[in-house]
Length: 309
Image (tube, rainbow, N blue to C red; front, side, top):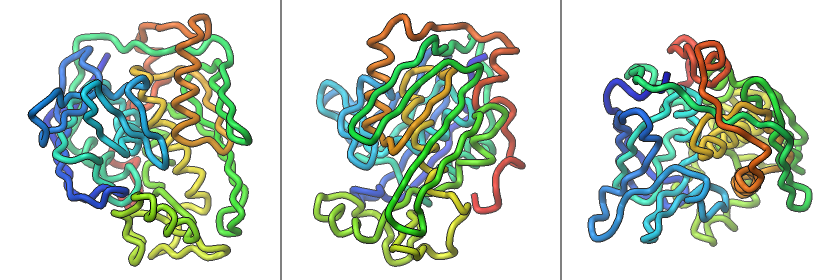
């Protein structure tokens, strides 16, 4: 059955790219509501934005959604991954600024708060998107594919010149709390050489570059982050986290295998657009109890979280 939170939970922090302070409250919602964002600091125009693939605009180093009145919310991918990974299908996200709080750069604090708050089962079945045939989007060396599978699987491969990152690949089935155990604490990362460029473009203004508490910073063969890595392959795990969050903008859980190679937010969003432009590549299915067991978030518990959360 569809779920929501038992009660609301509030987060405060700064936006990773805007550097602006923000307060965000995730509230329970009724069945069939989906995930919506509301900009509570805006009252002179429509301030509601659907968390949906066709509302995505800007995708440089984050995913930003926008409504017809030009109201935006940026860097939603870590929150969306937490909602997906906890199996939350309906929620209203109230936010008083233009960007979701970065917290520690991962989804772990969102996940812990959601699990501690608890989930409410609703009187409506979950509908999922079953992938029937492969769909691929490619742009240069970057590409992503969705192909048939019995549950949501994510496979990702990255290759960076920095020796501390290098070539990494990983493949996980997202069922049975795998996201919470394996991915949710993996932080966003960047290369030191790119920080000045990002800040000149008005990005990463909220990144704590001195203490490295909300991002992992790499410089050649060195990891500059305080405390080092949480996983030896934390970068590829974070890419998988991002992919899960971006895929949840499909509007329903996906039953299929996502394969990403050097893919980012733009590639994943364009893959979803290609999927929905190919009607015979998917179908909507109503999940019974057996099929629901293949979805992310079923049976997650606090014990699944690592101590860092």
